[in-house]
Amino acid sequence: MKKHLLTFLATVLSMVTTQQGRAQQSMVAVHDESGRMVWVNDEDPKPKPLSQPTIKPSYRNLIYWSQAEHRWKPVPRPSPAMMKGHQVTCDDIACPI
Image 1: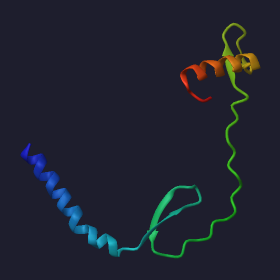
Image 2 (image 1 turned 135 degrees about the vertical axis):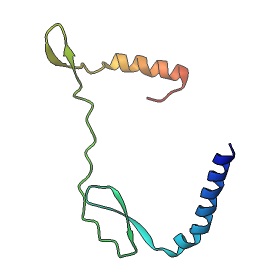
Image 3 (image 1 turned 90 degrees about the vertical axis):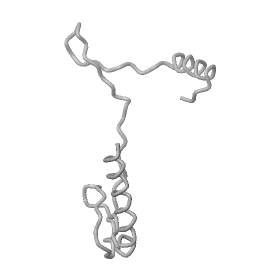
Image 4 (image 1 turned 180 degrees about the horizontal axis):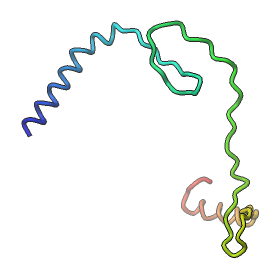
């Protein structure tokens, strides 16, 4: 227990003493070509090229494997009556769709 406490205190002490050195450093977070955040020394960030809008996945074309027919089949879309039933159920328990 004392060993862990001593290790913790030493870590906190080293973090506090080096905090002033970090404040003087000038590091900037930029995003590279793949979208990852990269920390670099203070420099003028490169202007971002105009990016195309991100495409959201479409869940309208869901499919499943039919074991009886041994093929992929589309999932049928819910009917308006089914959606109305779900809405009524959600209204009863106060959850938005």
